[in-house]
Image (tube, rainbow, N blue to C red; front, top):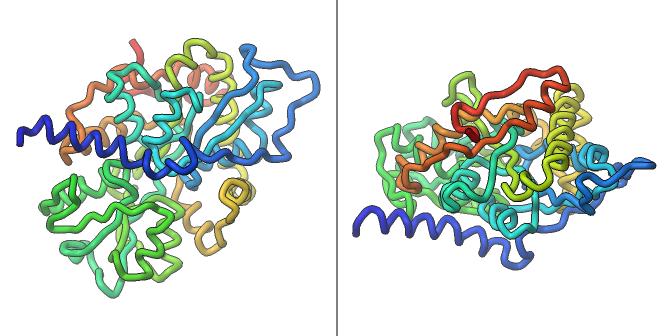
Length: 367
């Protein structure tokens, strides 16, 4: 079969899978309001909006959003415009929600942002800020895998075909000189696409030998006896790579720049508070996870997971471009045109006002 149809089929699979994941609850689950998110007396609506709809995942790599929601930073900056929230399990489903208007702004990983942007030919979203780096590990059964070379021939889980961790693992496999068919996951390593929620049970049952996953799933596996064989940060210059971006629909950005600026200001404030108060921030993120999912993380999972994530306003744009090339190399994406995927104008305005350093778009910004 010619290469181009195969790639189109792969992209169709990537787009469709997460929609099945969340079919039972629409685009995402509504997050619960927190008592700390109260509107200040005399506050006014921004841009005349009744609400701004914000999406994020129930992952610690999205802790900027978790903390911003829990501590009321978003509501404070939005005034009488209500900050409403929706949680997601899969990036492409969040892209669908953005495209439909079910959310306005979202915290999301690089691969779905790239896929969403290229699929729409650059018309649906902009990356407007960074949020986090790191927090991804290869955790294995130490009885079966004692060194990196032992990964060959084993069954290793990633969260989803074509997601950020899946692309990273496929690229790492290629760099070892091993062969895997990206679409089926079959080859010198068996890549098993497994939802993060069930990966720990799959590990306990022995149906997988390890997983390349984000936090807190990685630390959940360690709590079950797994061993961290590789921290993805060690594969990147300065040990930094984008794991979470902030995106907005281009329509919303054009029509409501003041609301977008308010959310970015809250994000910058959240990151500043997180980095100044790590223990309190960790507790706030966990409290929001409990409010959203009904279950908090135990200390033996929360503490090591939190330590491996860096919270930053910098979108680390150069690493996003590298991750896009990894997807191309794996055969999951045609060579993307990413020019214009970033618009950091409002973020840099907020950073300057806060007396902080501005950030760079690596030449991929709006011209």
